[in-house]
Image (tube, rainbow, N blue to C red; front, side):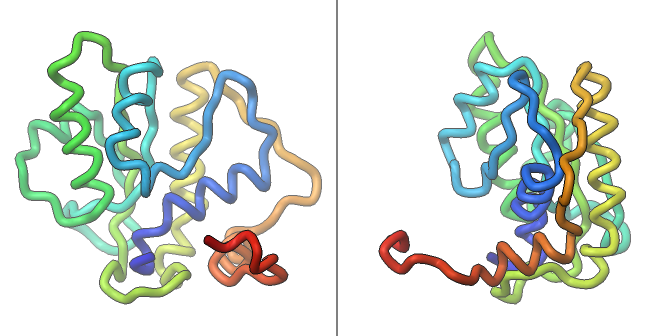
Length: 172
């Protein structure tokens, strides 16, 4: 991963570790799905994508952008999240059935260094991004209930960035 570019993956893992996921919600890491994202855009009523943005501001600033707004912003995208989402939106816009797409994004500090972790600036802002996601889900009538014995953001990043006790037979 390119350091802070992985913030969506860590947030996905945080939600999975700390909340009960209701049957009407699918939580997944879409970072490597490519064209498979098109299926979600077409089959779901609402798709919330979490990732990085190249908007102007300070590292850790958070934004909410609709799919329509992303399309209107023009073709120049600087983060992997923006490129992939915009490409899929452009392809899916030719189809009648497409759900509402919302990008909840944060300005990264570092997306150049190849490192499994988050910068301190982005890690500190993750709870604010989580709150925005929980608010967006609540607007859709989805309330997540917490699990006992969850993990902090720091623990999630450490656990998933530096996996221990991995059975080498599972690595492909």
